[in-house]
Image 1 (cartoon, helix red, strand yellow):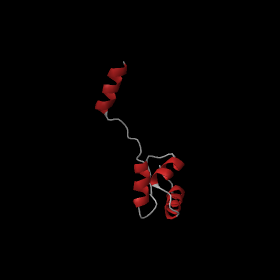
Image 2 (image 1 turned 180 degrees about the vertical axis):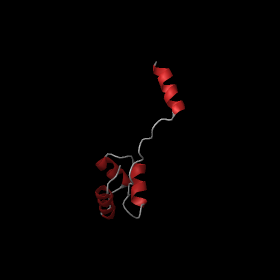
Image 3 (image 1 turned 135 degrees about the vertical axis):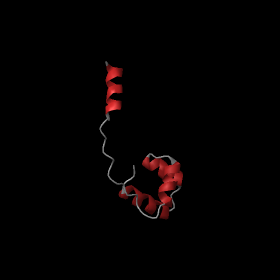
Image 4 (image 1 turned 45 degrees about the horizontal axis):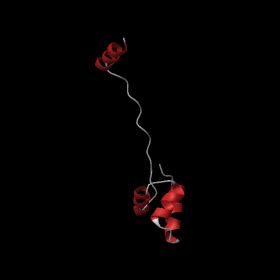
Length: 68
């Protein structure tokens, strides 16, 4: 969602007196998202995504039955 650059821009705009609503319009976000982002002490860090898992035998049989 947010990058470190967006988080830093919001922090700077907040120091310059921008309202949460104005920042929400500027970045195209919901005001609650802007508020939550500004309450963070550090930029959000996103970890790696979970890898998709293989279907087990029961799930595979179910899918084959539904498609067949």
